[in-house]
Structures are given as C-alpha cells and as structure tokens.
Length: 176
Length: 456
Image (cartoon, rainbow over the protein chains, first blue to last red):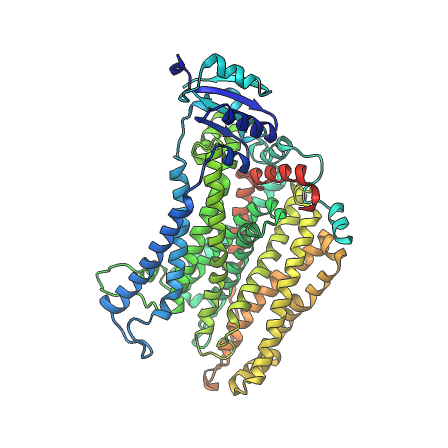
C-alpha cells in the first residue's frame, strides 16, 4: 500500500521547527527523507548526513583548465606556428601564465555551475512534491519535511501519527 | 561603543520584516500587471538612445573608423577609453557578489543582484569596443585560437590576446554566477505568479528548483567556490587591461604600478556607478527598507578607500616621472599638467582626488543627494582619467614631428552616449522582469538577524 503515495509531507512555520522535526525523524530511524526550505539551512545538511562533493569536481575542472591553457599555447607557439618574438624561446611560459590562469578559472567555474546542476539532477521539471498545493509556499515562507514511502520504516498510519506529533501546521499525502 | 550604537540606528534591514513580506515586496515589482509610468518614460528614453547607438554603429561599419577622430598618432581614442571605463564599472558587481561574500558582509545581500546585473551590462558594452575598434569587426573571430585554413595561430605573448581571454572568461563567469543566484528566485516567481504563462516562463528558468536541503547544500558550496574563483578573476581582469598599456614602452604607460592602480580605479568607478543607480532605484521602487542608509554609508566608505588609493597613484605617477630621471616621462607628466589636455587632467584630479574627500564626513555618506552628486562626479572623473591615460601619452610621444591633437567627433560621442542608453535600457528591462534583490539571501538575513540581532 505504501506504493500508492510518494510520501508524507509536514508543513512548518519556522526554520527551527523543521530542523527539530528532521532531527527527531532521524532519531526515530527515518532515513529516506528530505527537507524543503526557502533558504539554505546548514543544520539540515548535517541532520540529513549529506556531504556535498562539488568541490572535488571543481578542483578537477581547474586542473583540466590549467593543462588545457598550457597545452593550447604550447601547441600554438611551439608546434603549429613557431615564431620568434622579441628573441624569446618558443616555449616562453611566463608569457603564458595569464591565459593559463583565465582558463583555469573558466573551467573550474563552468564545472561549479554545471556540476552543481548535474549533481542536483536539474533540469527536473516534474517532481511529486509539486502535487501538493501548499508546496508553492516553499519558495516564500514555509518549511517542509517529506518522509518518503521508500523508507523501510514508512507506514502510512504510523508515519502520519509520528509527523503529527512534531507539531506541524498540517500533514499531507504526496501523490507520486 | 559608539560604532555599534551607530549601526543600531541604521540597520541593514528595516525592522518588522519576515520571510513573507520580503518575498511579497520584491516579487510585486516584477509580477505586477501595471508597468509604472516612470518606467515607461525611462525605458522609452533609453530605447531612443539605443537607436542612436545602432545608427552610430551602422555609420561606423559603412564608412570605417575614419568617422572617429583617430589619426596616425593617436590610434587609440574613445573606443579604448570607453572599453576601460565600462570594464571598470563592471568590477564593483563582482566585488560585491564575490569578495564581500567571502568576507561575510551581510549588507551586500540587498545590493548584489543589481550590482551583478550592472556588471554584465557594463561588460557587454565594454566587449563591444575592442571588437569594433579593430576596423573590420566581422573578422574578430581571428582573435580566437582555432585550427584555421590559414594555419595561423594567435600570438600568445601579446597582452591584447590576454585581454580576449580575460574579458571572455569574466563575462562568462559573471553571467553564470548571476544565473545561479537567480535560480531559487526564479522558483519563487514561478510559485508566486498567478498567470499561467508567466509561471511557465519562470518555471523554465527555475529548472525545477524545489528548495531541497541536499540541493541547497550543493548549491551553497558551488556558490562559495564561484565566489572564490571570481575574486582573483576580477583582480586579474583589470590587471590584464592595464597590461595593454604597461607592457608597451610608451611614456606614462610603461610603469609597474599600473595593475593595482587600474584595479583600484575600477572598483572606485564601479562603486560610484552602483551608488548612482541604487539611490534613484530605491527611491522609485520604495526599497528604503532593504537598501538602507547603512548600505549607502558602507559604499561611501569603499569609495573613499579606493579613491584614496587612486589619488595616491596620481601622486606617484608624478613622483616616478621625476624620480626616473627619464626625459620623456618628465615631459609626459608636464604635458599632462600644462599641455592641451590640462583642463581634463585637472578636472579628473578635482573629481577623483579632491571631491571624494567629502566622504570623510558621515553627514555626506548618509545624505543620498550628496552621495549621488559625488558618485556622478567620480563617474565623470574616471572617464576623464582613462581619456588622459590613453590620449596624453600618445599625442606627444617620442618624435615631435609626429605630434598631433586628438578630439572625439560627433560619431565618437554618439556611440559613447549610445552605450549609456543601451546600459540603461538593459537595466530597465532587468528591473521589470527579474527580482532586483536576491530574495533567498534576504530571507537568510531575516533568519540571521532574528537569532543574533545586530552584532553580526
């Protein structure tokens, strides 16, 4: 029967309430859950035990950018089109630093943006939580906690009773 | 302490706001069906000036750069002056969004969005000038490194090519940074809009953002990294612009202090432009609750600090010219002070060096109309500064037989004024269709203030 819903959604009025609710849900053993808030709340990330990994991708992006920057200039100035300028060697690397730097920043920045979007699964136009009318307020001033039906402890009645005990404004079923 | 009581007097956010009122006040400007009459008038005027810009470009492309006042001696005129001026203005937006984010300056939250918008529009104008000043702009792609049939590659030892990379990276990163900041706000507009079409359009740009905690974690980390990347980038951009001058051997350009001098000048002119825009915008849209006098005061302080650095550079320019013992350097500075461009030189010293000293007074920093006059003065002064740097060094270079006089023609001025109109038109459109203040960061600020009070 738990297949018929995506999960249960509890609505809260304050960030403190949703943080407290998430903490108690985790203590009660729930794992497949997500909090939805109008602005980032660091405590939630800790409670959900989530560690962002974007920084590793950005580092790799930066290194690739630096290698590309040097490789491009080396190829152009030494292999493809060697030209003596001001009596300097073909591989006059100090003159290449600026472009290496710019491409490092460019590649790292592009990785940060598209990596973030990719890791978050965007674009993602449809999601079950949007089926709840009140969920429109998530980008305004309300805070939501959703326990998903996938969670092994999920039970429509008992989980609803548990969420009710957290003093939410209301609890709604989320249709898949 | 005196300082803390002052801050208590003027908060960064007027009291009495919660998450909902912040959202409503900012989205109302965008989602309102009625376009204010003042907006229509302002946009209409700006649009007419855009037409002037298009006319100037058409004449330029049809007849060539001969329509400008350039001559063999002064081959870098208004185009390069405007380029440096516009890029410099862009720098304040990145400074506010990146450097002040890293320093956790919360007062930046309400001004970063339109300062970033200003950056992008200013850099769009800046990027135009180097391309059109080449004379054959349809061949501008030759600047890019790609395997061509000519088997030619760009010259990577040239600062002019570094510029291509610096500016294109800068505009790309600024645009992405701006868009990333907008994603949660697009979601807000999507959720607040009543009109179905409007909701679809904003929903498209929101990419399905739903405020999940895991998404926020990834998102905040990515924003922080972007800020950390944009910080050295913004310093590099105007440094590279200054290399266009410093790497040459022209008197007045060939100095080592040009990069920091240019960066300080960029931030100076950029903040002046932010102030010039912020004061009328907050008045027109009644945003005094969010952009308080505290913001104006802080921006005034940054203007004062960077203005002093710039003034110091002016003094050092004179000192080095004398101390170098170099005949040409000495002549260059004397020529600047007493030659045909002396009025412009002394005007820039007045606007950038002397007038800014009024910012020492708190009364001036906190009085919008006084600050506005000062900021406009700095905008003019910084344009003159670039004019003086470009023109006075070139017009009387080493060989007296090549000396010449340079002045902008009608088409020089019309194109410059046209880009001002283009800038204004883009800003008007931005104010109408996008939230001018970052809403989720303002809500973070509300959250923060409700917990920690004013001491943060």
